[in-house]
Length: 148
Image (cartoon, rainbow, N blue to C red):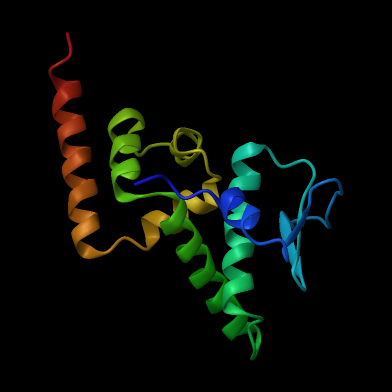
C-alpha cells in the first residue's frame, strides 16, 4: 500500500486549485476558500504536505457550523483525520524506533509532516495502536540499554 499523498489526490480533481505563492495571515498555514486551497508560501515541503491534507479534509467535510466551541472540535477532528492519513501506524512505529518520543520535531521530520500532525496522530491513537507504539518504545529502550 502506497503512503497517502495529498498532491496526488488533488491531481485527480481538476476542480481544486492550490495557491502557494502568498504569505497568509499570522498563525495561518493554510486556508480553504471555496475549492481553492491557500498554503502559506514559507511552509517547507513537510508543512505543505500536512497543511494540504488538512485542508482537503475540510473540503470533504464542508464548512463547520455552530459556535466557536463546535468549530474548535471540528478542527481537532480534521487534524486527526489528516494525521491518520499521513502517518500510518507502521510509519509511526518505525519513526518511534528511530527517533524515540522525546522530540515531536524529530518525529515530524522523520515522518515528513509537521509537529501538529504528529501531535494529532499520537493523541488519536486507538487503544490497540497505543499498545503497539508502547511496545516499540519499550523495545527501543531495551536496545539502547544493550549498547556498549
